[in-house]
Image (cartoon, rainbow, N blue to C red):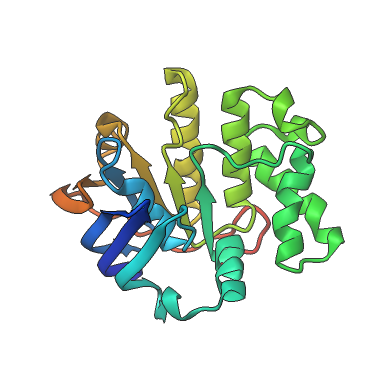
Length: 247
């Protein structure tokens, strides 16, 4: 069963009178419980594909055609408020540049998502602490982003994506600036999230990072899928998650 389906997706970047076809007719089905690699060099379209899934495009970015379906819903048909709920609850995004709010503590950065979703404050501490334990940074609850190393900031960004045991996690270059030991830690965090039932998409220029896992790899170039290395999708049923709310 496909949890995420992309049909003939087309995205343009329109800036200063020029147009770039960033995503050019991509068709992709992602099975429930699968871990999938989106691989390609800088500018191949993998970041734009991930941004299109959650409908957070950069300046000048326009979806000009196609569909992104989460289960049986076409995400294009959702309001902005509806997409905020999807991003907060059903799709967790890990951004390449972390997007942590510097004036907020780690706790506040994570609980901010829960506030947007309307969860009562009494739920915040339990969920934030559980997400931070999953990335082994529960002791950094009251730290500010600038007090953390790059690797710690990346793990906090991942914790934010995990906080609601999302159906799908989309990670953009999550290990791009990390040393090999930290890279393996990050890979393990995603593997554990996958075992809890999340479908994981990792966009990376590092082909070996995905290839060594034996998972399916999609290769992108100039906004198109140019190759695919098949693997047997590991469909894992939803099990009890970080907070006992998996289903």
